Image 1 (cartoon, rainbow, N blue to C red):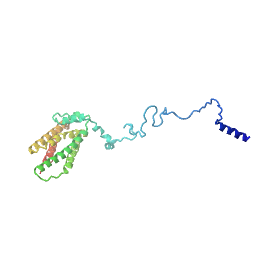
Image 2 (tube, helix red, strand yellow):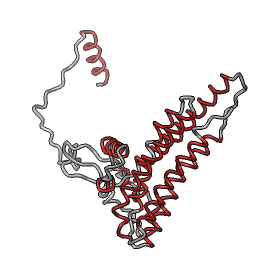
Image 3 (cartoon, rainbow, N blue to C red):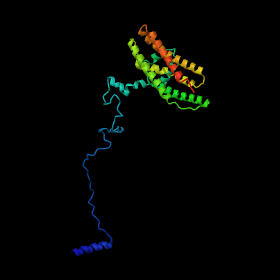
Image 4 (spheres, one colour):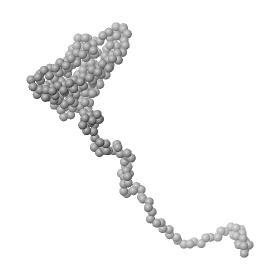
Length: 279
């Protein structure tokens, strides 16, 4: 029997034909419902939103607003040491700063405090003082260098010019308004501290062009420039505080005069140290 099968297989090999497999007919295959979900899922899961909306950050710290922050807000005197406490005082644009600088160049108007009462800034005063330090150091160095070269003498850079200028301008625009704030509060005529910082900061702008004019090597001309700048700066501060200080009583004139003379004293100090060239 087996020999017969082998003979049949050999005959099929010799003939080169392979037996066909009978067709079982059409077979339909059905799959059971799968638990797989479509992508993207129709319902948001976690921090991945569905539909065509882009996904949010994994850490949505940068997406949250300040008001929605989970961090506790500082209150009381601790808020003074936060950046948020000073943010409103830097919320000014270029037009505001230029307008306030222009008002400082016309000291007899006396309307600066009224215009800035609702939005006093520290941005302008900070950059005015910083610019003054740079201009004072660079102009002073350049003038002394030229003076030494004209007389054929050896010149050395004075680093103290930068530190002295920084101490004078930053110190003056900080200490003087603080002292005036205490005095006005004592005489029952309190004024906003930031308002005073703003007023004194912009009052120093006139010294920037004055320092630039000090390049001209004429001593009498430098005295005139320093005197005019000091007079304009002192008038600007005094006239803008006069109306407010009048509520302090009979001593208001003494306070205004002291403010005026102190501003003039600043111009004299600047003349003796920055506007004077010694070889």
